[in-house]
Amino acid sequence: MPYIGRLEERPLLDVIQIIAYSQQSGILSVEGAESRGAIVFENGSVVCAVSPSTLRLLVRAAKQTDDNARSMCGIQILTALRELFDATSGDYRFEGKESPVPELEGLSLEGFYRAGAFDTGDLLLMLEKAMENARVRFASTPTPPPGEDGSEQRRHPRYGPVTIRGTLSVSRKLFPGHLMNVSLGGTFFRAETLPELDQEGVLDFELPWKLGPCAARFRVVWLTAEGPETFRGAGLRFDSLVGDSRSNLDAYIRQFEELVGQIGVEANEKKEM
Image 1: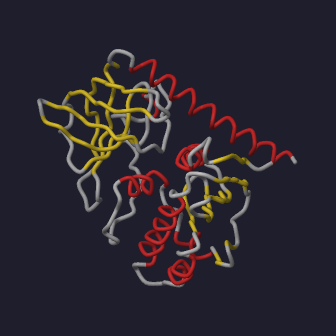
Image 2 (image 1 turned 60 degrees about the horizontal axis):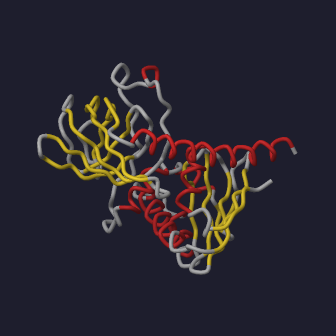
């Protein structure tokens, strides 16, 4: 059975985040008053996104064979996603697929699968930052170095991708950026500039779904390597959560898990049919 709903009740951003976190494969169709289109996922990453005004450009991008092919495909996908996010009312429908989707709106997806799917968290961050430079590098969220913040050391599961605005405060210096995942124990934080390794400070951020503000005392436990990426990143370990932050964050995680459970049930029912 497909996973369906109304955009008035569940914004498109929430639906995309849940599909990505659940590592689902399939087609998310959007029929909104302001825009319509579809997004194809493979294991939670975006293979292709199409809207009426971008279909012709996506056809051209799919035929590219030079070194810029992947970047050109990514830019067109991002443009389609921007248009779909304009839809604030209407219907969405996600249908899981066990094999690659051959075509969408008459567009062959073979080249998009061959080029490789794009990290959903990176795409959402680019949308949030209102990207204007088309020659941006599409890089995946890095894995923490082993022994520093590896999964074997985590006591709390991380939920993402998310794009929650936040600000680090370290020795009276501010570092604005975005949380790319969340947990009770820490987060991966992306920003143009970051504090140094082992520095401590306070992270302030506002949770979605009107769940309130949060503040966490943190330590920087790892940093991404220097390179040409548009945004750098840091692994933050929460040493403590201030005031009502723990209960607010608990409420957010519970809602996230409920949504994951909903789409997981739909996916399992489809497999059993």
